[in-house]
Length: 153
Image 1 (spheres, rainbow, N blue to C red):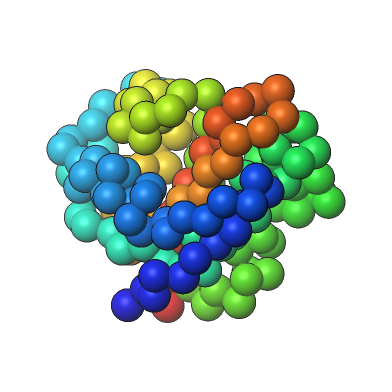
Image 2 (image 1 turned 45 degrees about the vertical axis):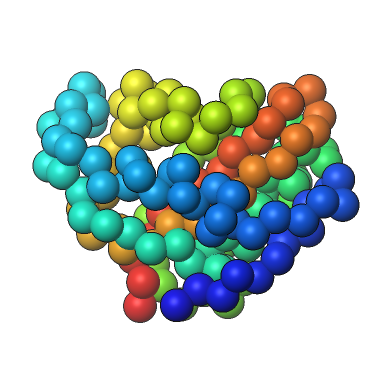
């Protein structure tokens, strides 16, 4: 089970990902059937668990986007979402990444992802078992949110 590891982000504040982010986001991780439009109809998902290394990979990317003032799935160093996950030592299988900018409410971010065909599909991957979430404030983007989706080993 995940430890309550404290992560530090670029404004020198600390937070516990599970308590601060995962609780609001965990509610919609058991989602009812969804019509992801061009990505098809998806059956309800099962529960997922937060994983410390996925949280870390998500936080690293959120901080990178804020510190370098960009918004993209490719890191400032050219890294892919899966490369950033593996760089933490995670041994599962990376499956997807969602990013969002703006907003202050995790539930509204999930709603925005459900309204986007590809992001909706990422939330509905039936074989996903673990997620990680990162967020930060900074740059021209305001709040930056990152969700990592994976299948544990």
